Every structure is written in C-alpha cells, then in structure tokens.
Image (tube, rainbow, N blue to C red; front, top):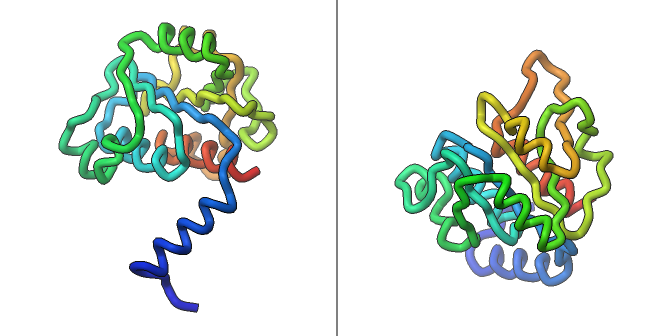
Length: 172
C-alpha cells in the first residue's frame, strides 16, 4: 500500500465521486458561532460533504476573514453561503423550501444522531460554542439529535459534531 499523490489521487477521488453520489440535499445553519476558526472548519467540512449551502446567522463572522480563509482553506469561495441576521427567518425560509430542520443539540427530545431518519432535504443547525442553540431557535426546529459522550466531557467542538452528523447522513 502506498499513499496517493498527484494525478493518481485526482483520478481516485474523481472515480469515487462518480460511483458514490450522495442522495441528500444538505444545508447547515450556524447560529451565532463566535470563533472564526470554527467557521473556517465548518466551511472545509461543508465542502468535503457537498453541503448545498451554509447559512451564517447572528454573531457568526463572515468571509472574507483572515482566520476563516486560512482555516477553511478558502472553501468560502466554493461553498455557497449567505448571511441572515435572524436564524428564525432563515429557518422559516428553509422550511418553505421543503427542508426538515434538525438541531445538533442536547435537548429533552433529542435522539442519538445515528437513530434519526434524515429526509433527503435536511438542514442541520449548530449553535454557539458555549451556549449552544438558543431556546427560540430550538423551538423552530423539527427535531434534535445529539452525539453520545462516553468520557467526562459533555460535548465536542461544534465543527467536529457537525462533521460527524453530516458524514453519517451521507454514508448510513
């Protein structure tokens, strides 16, 4: 076994994509993610997962931003994104377009992320690094999922949690 580089890597990835097209239309909504490094990481994960759109809301910093650009490796130039001050406005618009809105959040009705039946048009909502998804935003969501934690920590970094759920949806 040897690592792929150059033309061999490009061919490998091209052929894999042709044979494994995801059947999902995924959107991610960032509700007041405060740290630009997390936003950059989300752009990078969104590009890798083929996310249709990122919706940045509240205090979430927006591109162009030096940290977002560096951490995200300029994926903000590839991934469609928009800013909407109020996450409730964005959620209402996404619902009108047929998306089911699912918070990645610890909530009283949340189910483990691997038990939820995600529809073809899903919007995942993640919230502030310290405070999570607000009560108002959570109330506007159709459902909530969580990542079980087996150690002493109660949560993962927001971009890590979102990435896990995105890739689970694509490859379950």
